Length: 476
Image (cartoon, rainbow, N blue to C red; front, side, top):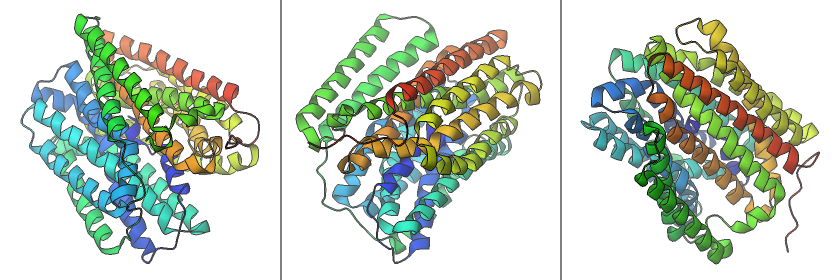
């Protein structure tokens, strides 16, 4: 799922902030890394625990999807509101509060004796993550200047990649040796360290600057929730019942109401519609949704297929994903420098196409066959393609709107990345509901869809971005 990987525009959010030197720069950086790592680690470890959770709590395919979506839904819908709340109440306060809520929710997850309690706790985790993530980045952007800011954000991004890399194997080992509950206990010491260091060393900023768009947040959350529920029900049962149509229609109506409210609020909206006056921004939004949607489906389905269809242990399934994060973490730095020289259009056009080729290679996956020949080649090519797109996407989004909207645009793009993963997970039930040879065939169909989505993302970049650096529209 996409929350397991630092979205490129998470970094853009911090870069868009005006900086100043922090009194305790190292402690500030360490606090923000600890806080944001909670979301990255938790997002990846839960995927390898899905079969164990399903067996322990008696969850069917649709219910297993909600183990992921109950977290992704509030994170996607409330990410922008979380940033605005930091501007209004103070970023340090939101960072500590969000981290504390995440820790409490993690404890509730570990103690959950039923699926209903687990899903409620996962939703609380998503709310906590929506509070802490944008504010950890805004604190970084406000705490450093010039070259120091770039180094700090680079360190944060590298730490996120490392957290994403170690999450699946560590989670797999914990599931094997202790049980799935242990993956949630893992969050507690990290959260405690983040809160203590932030309380002691992080300077507050942002209080009182921005009003909150509660109506927009409520409509976005309810709309995404209804649509996600309908898609999950449809994909897991393979039938479009009356409940599916009612849920889908309600979701569309609520999202339409959200757009109407945002239009009326104008520049005071959490998602100003004036952003969509920029053709590059529209193209980048479409690219992000398609590319991260394809990726979100892969990160959820591949470990499940390897465990259930191939007899992998949770640890082995976690290690199977390790090359993905390693390649992205090491190659993204190189692509950042190349983008500065040639602009983002070519990397954002080619990178998703390469990713699509990697998905096409996953049509060869045989969970009972050799990992080295049937699984690893596709993972490596997908990782190379994503590495080509992650860093250029930051540059492109920051350049696609005027300076007054860079923070909002990057935050919205990050939310779109999570929403793409949310929709992909909602549709994953069509695969999870299968067994035996049908499970492998369904995974191959999902890989083919992922290949098509990734290639369409590359086409969107070629059609909407100009050569060289993206130019922001002039303000009127």
